[in-house]
Image 1 (cartoon, one colour):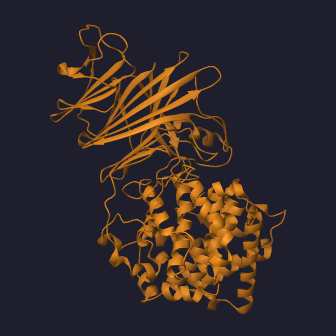
Image 2 (image 1 turned 90 degrees about the vertical axis):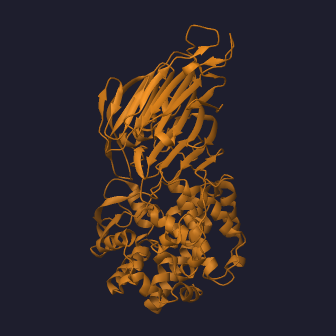
Image 3 (image 1 turned 30 degrees about the vertical axis):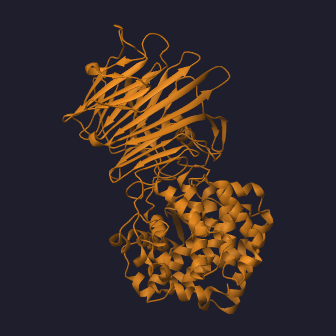
Length: 631
């Protein structure tokens, strides 16, 4: 830690401490709240980046470091990561109260003296993931505490333990971790601890080679981490960002251009949160306020989506230091596109000032992913409309398995054929296979199509889901089409914000704010979702049933008029049932949607819809009579 003092000299320039002590925001308030628990020998895990949150305070001394108060091993893992050290260090900096420093020493030296040597009895404390995080938290917290607040003996004991951590991480690192958030978190803790040594890049080149390999292995060309969970994505890139922060502040030349790499990863992360920086709850992620994390990226100028007025109130100033705060005058706001599509990851997003629509049709990297093929979410101006189920727990329980299942997502499935079968929290019996995805945007219309395959030993089904977002009439249309070898019944599920209460009238659902229509059989049931780990809330869910071809309309305009349109082939009187037609009318705006389920092999390929509108193709839209052939 020989460069620690140099780093602090940059970090605390220009009366930095006095400035941040004047800051008051929910990020700092939550840190102080957690620290009050710690002073009472209790702990909660409520930080947005806490992988497994816990809101019930438990006495640390009753359970440390290997026992769990709630039957969930994750509580032990969270405790052993020592994230509380950063909280206590920040509280000490912000208040100059010795009680926070003394509690830091009490807990850290308690761990070192009781569990500081890995052995067969304390494996819960020494997983590589948690060991790397613990080492990283120690290093980051020492920036705020400083060497001067330790006795010579304490400092020597601390450095000795850090060396034990480093040796353990090096000797226990397996190549399979290169393809995992575990590997990045282990390596980043190791690197953070050696960055404060002179010639660290030269002396630890093998560690840097491994870190570079994680970057090459784990991310798509468009910057999405392969495990397909926004929370995991942030765990990885945030730890990369901490490495960049120290290296840039100390002018350490890295063997990789980490800033340019991170800008690509953070750009994809921009599309993993809504307009209020709440995280997309996809595949084992929580719907949680991530604004302080995004503000950290903004302060490092990895994310340039806000104007100068916003930058005055960054929540993460205390994490950035003066080195970056002094550069905010150079900040140049960028215009991020209103849509994003990573074909390799299978994620498509529409994000503007009003709408946040996501569609997922990719491979699951994590072994504890979910049956979310074809799943969509929708927010309007930061208010959730269609929500995802979340994860709730990593313990083996009914809620965990049900939230992983298809009926807990806004997706389509079959009554009998289940393409994805969840075996337990960590394994599948069978997985759905994504076949393709396409995205088109035109003025006020966004179109996303997802195709996937479900099969077992007896049956096979190909799903096609067409999603239309008409921004000017605040309406989402979802058309599901499935072709199966054996007779089955299509089921589509839509999960609504828990604040929404519906009345069911003649096949339509209505509230003061939302209108839901389907040409299939529509029903509702009470279900639950998990906005955060260890939390459950009830909400209204919609189930749509149909033989194989169904349309659902979800509108924020309660006065919208919806009409099914019969479609005919040219010169034929009978209805052409392979093509579905829907007409939406609102305030003089008329949208017609035509989706053809199969190729025309008999009679004319020219089709005729409402008002003698002629068209050809599998997806065609008319806007006030103007033809748009989408596909």
